Image 1 (cartoon, rainbow, N blue to C red):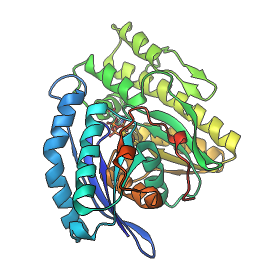
Image 2 (image 1 turned 45 degrees about the vertical axis):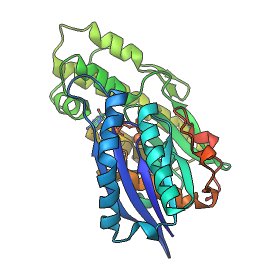
Image 3 (image 1 turned 180 degrees about the vertical axis):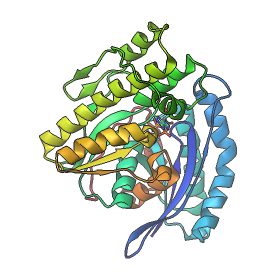
Length: 325
Ligand code: ATP
Ligand code: FE2
């Protein structure tokens, strides 16, 4: 069984191929990211990038997998959550491919795809996932046929906080890596709003507060931002792990590249006697392979009914009944 999956929820467009035989494996994962020349992601510009990039990415993925288009059994795409114009590019390409090849198609949840690729590549069984990207910040875990959102940001995503803050200092998008570098030499811990509500977090107060601290060194702002925001994330993740009695923590999303966040998560997990898992870079960020993998897991729900392939910008993980676990 072979599935080709298309990811296009935000600034990355990607195509992956996954195969299920005796075991499940990723045969191809090719991706291309749009980066704005100035400012943040412009959804229409990102969508135009995806339209241009997709034909070549599709060819490359088939070549890398060592198969022909006709060998595919099912086509999947990320149905949401994400930016409307970007989502529609991936959905349209997937519909076209499915119709041409006369194969069934399935729209899958992007957040669940992050969890499943993390589980598969890291070998963990039933983790609490801390999913931290530009647009998403959620603590998710499986319980009774659903991936439950235990906690989440009540306003902006953690990556979005970093990018918005960075933009004020002309740091090019994506700002996370540069902020991480600057934070390494920061020493002074500035007082920023620590906003945890149960298992939810809120970041916009930090952003506002940072803009009032103009006399402080940029290194100290970055340091304090990371220490405060990451501590909030670790706190809610730990609360979810304690509540659900889980002993695996899985990180995912672009912000999971951050060494300081990884370190804080590892310390927390170790103190609880739990394992901490961080997928390889290409499987942490948005990628086509995870969409192909979830397409395979959900292949029984694929169909030729195109009415079921509408994108959903606010698609939540807990809307999906998990039939494959
Ligand atoms: P999604 O649709 O899942 O929200 P996205 O477009 O935000 O995806 P990702 O690649 O998952 O894509 O994440 C990008 C975010 O990760 C950006 O906000 C970027 O600043 C942040 N980021 C990347 N590297 C680092 C790092 N080393 N430290 C902190 N943040 C980082
Ligand atoms: Fe993502």
